[in-house]
Length: 296
Image (cartoon, rainbow, N blue to C red; front, top):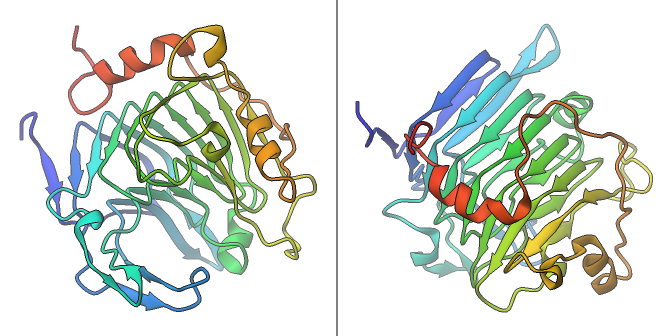
């Protein structure tokens, strides 16, 4: 189809499939004409849409939840295209949001790599893990091994990624933080995020303590004790010594009643080259997105 190959207005679903590569495609505007109002979502209710640009998901096979496995999403682009949520009106005091995730990984999906992609013009970017409780949550335990590296997250709102249950290695990503930013790394129930060598370019008033947010149900029997996130080297707005920020320290200092431990119960080993954090902005800007794999 050529270098402008796009899938527009469609929800691409990888359902219980194994060994799938998605590369060199632009995904735009999985637009829900009729989002549903949920009065129990948050303190004031929210509009919820049905469609992601890509869903890696699964279903029951002989009473066992089987997700998408061994999936590589590489050198793609994701956005809301012609219908950004930011342009929608409000009803019941909440934005009439007509898009869901850009790339969601749920329902016992496992062994997934998300690399060298460009995410822009979107709110809920990447949810890893189905729910806090129920059969899908039980099926997610021990699954959701995901690597997220060398992606450009360009002026987005949240979920870069948000994680439940999964072991997720997040490294060498470039985050450009704009005015609508809410958080990057969402620590959910029993999540084990290992984030290192990431670079944040902050354009507005966002402070490093806002890079992390914490979502969990403390009463859940599936919760692990001392929930935490490992955060290695993180640069903010430059490579100088003063730009090396201890993001977890900043988060804990700003959230005395919602403390996160500085460790998780695993250490990533299955990854290829990790670049110096200072090299990430130029490298990811030049190489992320469709048809940049062999560009000089």
